[in-house]
Length: 182
Image (cartoon, rainbow, N blue to C red):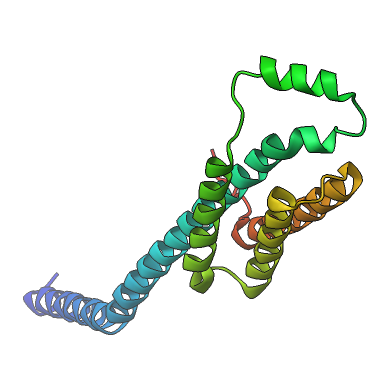
């Protein structure tokens, strides 16, 4: 090979390297900005979704606690017509822990605070269902009517609203699993 051929090869190689570095620089400069911006936006969106899930989980926790305490609070009124009063008195006496009205009112208040504070983060439909749930449980817990059939209907209606709200929340936060290659 002659000296001119070597110089031409080195010059062409230098031009190719310079062109590739220039192309890489501009592609990173132009597309890298969008990439970083998108990456930051996705991180913010992920944080927002995680916070919304935390709010929803807190709300469901309060809702579930109220739902469970309510049946424990009024269980003897529900079974009242089915069992004799002496047997109910014996059951109450032998029971280790009875839910007091103070506990029910506190659970109801915590539920309502959690419900209204989560309003901006949950859908209107979930808010409606849980509001109906809260109203029905208030009616169930503090009703003067001790008719077991009426109380059962009220509790079942509250349970229906509770389950519908849970299904709506599950549908919102349900994600499909991605299979990864091993």
